[in-house]
Length: 120
Image 1 (cartoon, rainbow, N blue to C red):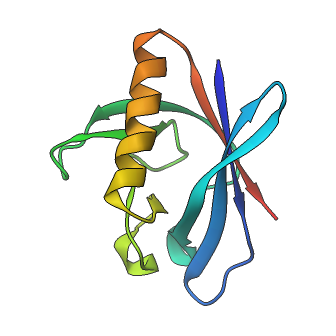
Image 2: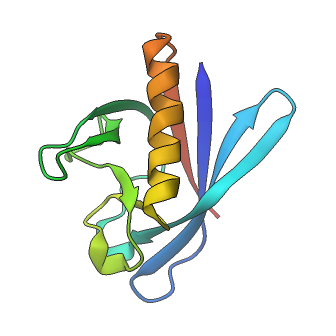
């Protein structure tokens, strides 16, 4: 099972900065900085993650599963809180592709992928 952790910092206006980590037996490996929109934050819980085709973006992207009262919460590129209505933003397309490729590989191995969201 793959395990990822997103640690959010306190909101600064509408922007909620964070850091995404891959958790391994030997510790946490930082993957990238993140941003979310404070007006649309999903609850700080543990979510299953899958890689599926996004109807909106027309490409494979990670999606958080079983978000309470929400759907279509994805991990994608973006640089401003306005780019998100609940999604987790990463800084650029290369980072998005790298995360998607890694998760897709794990998914194809039938590994369960989890993301824990924590507020600092």
